[in-house]
Image (cartoon, rainbow, N blue to C red):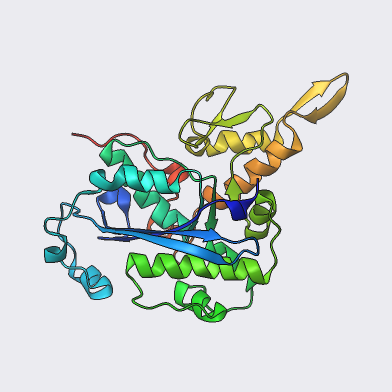
Length: 294
């Protein structure tokens, strides 16, 4: 599969706070759809941006950062109204975001509250991870740092449409500088990102693009709900004619390791030696996926 032939959809959210599992909600969502030419340059783009009524007050600190006020959201649709549009844009795309766990967790939670199935992109690139890999000596990896480093304009920062566009253009510019080959797997290796699992029989995707187990105690269930079992798959061996071999092929084990590294490890917020719960971001793979109480 050629990644340059797919839609590149950069997405960003503005929210009432930092924790979607403690009641914080999306107040703005933006998706910028890029089409690339054969050289990997932007051939066209489309911006889809919505203010969203969260049903709760916007904290003063959020207004200071984003400029979004309660009165700006009065009369705007709740997320449930735009959920299908967002899902359609992300489905089948290469999704790009700056700090994927944050925006991914908020969107998955909003989809759950809306009763609309989340549809996983074909692949998801985190420009924080890309920056840390390709600029290892840089002092900062904020979106403003990355954009400035690559000569990408970022105007109206901390608004979803501006951040999404700068994120997408930064990814595209850096991929061009590194002459990333056309094949999707080459892009995933370059970005330390994760796509859909290999077609080796042990893993598959459900109708909404979510990786699922095809066998074992969690057959049919999403991989992200059972990271310990996925970790076991990277090590499991079976005895065959007096010789021990890995139970699963290398392609499956490599994908599982990448998924665990990218989506299941969490991202430290505070001091690296801290063990306080508040010092870790909750990745969506260990989020509570159950419907909220009525």
